[in-house]
Structures are given as C-alpha cells and as structure tokens.
Image (tube, rainbow, N blue to C red; front, top):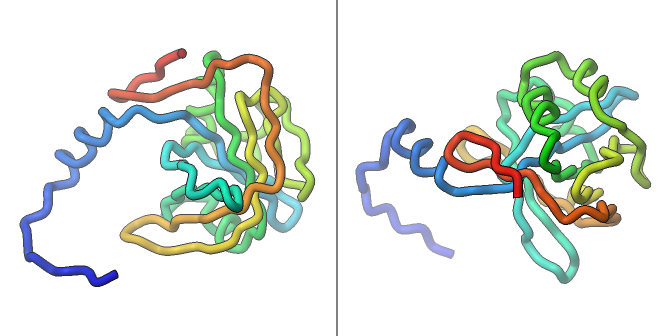
Amino acid sequence: MDIVDHRYDFVDKATYRNGMSRLGTSVNVVTTKAGGQRYGFTASAVCSVSDTPATLLVCINRASSCFHAFEKAHHFCVNTLMPGQEDLSELFGGRMPGRERFALGEWGEGLTGVPVLANASVSFECELTNAVDEATHRVLFGRVIDIRENEENATLLYCMRRYISG
C-alpha cells in the first residue's frame, strides 16, 4: 500500500486525546511472564484482527515500565475485566510496581504459563506472531491459543475518562 504525504497539519496531542476519550472500549489487563516474573499493564487498545486464524492485537507504550518483558515474550494473555474490577485496572495502570500488581485478584496460569485472571469476563491466551512499532507504541499481534469465558456477560467499559458498567 502506497502512503501519500499530503503535508496536512496534524491535530495536537490534547485534541487527539479528547477525541479518543469518546471512543468507548473494554478494559483489559495484559499479562506475560519473563525470567520467572509476572508482568502486566492495563490496555484499552485491543481489537480483533481475524477469526481465521483467531488473531488479536494489543498496543503497549514502549515507555511502559513492563515493556522490556513484553519485548522478549513469546506469549501473553488479554484479560478483559468485569464491572467491580476497576481497582485492578487502576493498579495495572501504573499505581504500583510490577510484582506487587498481582497481589490483587485471583491469578492462575495459562497453557503457556502466562498469568490468567480467574474471574475475568474473558481471557485470550496468545502466541506472539508479529510486532510492529508505530509512534510511541508497539503493536503486538497474537494468535489465540486458548479462551476462558466467565458465565457472567458483563464487561467493564471505559468512555469519556470514566468506567461504565454494562
């Protein structure tokens, strides 16, 4: 695909962030294991890529305190939170150092040893298939190798800089 450079003036960071705050999304804690340690971060930039084969993507800021673990990881898990788990979102959003983040919540291990939240709305365990750097972030593409669904249908959403319980 050819990219044409039209030399437009781009919107500033504040305008962009305000506009994006209106794009409602699920709240996810993305986890991995590296060097025997568990790592995770809160992500709203998660979406389906394809169902054949089942593939999703997640974006991580390369300045994140746990980026080094995801940079080397071969597997990761996207744990979609449920209403009432706002504290987990805040915790993995950077309030506390990496190791201490897993003190809250009931964590097990997936097929590949990555941390899986026992009471997530849904958890997608993935094998990393590709990674692409764009601006400040890295886009991780994961082939889904296991899905764990909760019997409850509710998913925690985030829109207009606040949590919304569905």
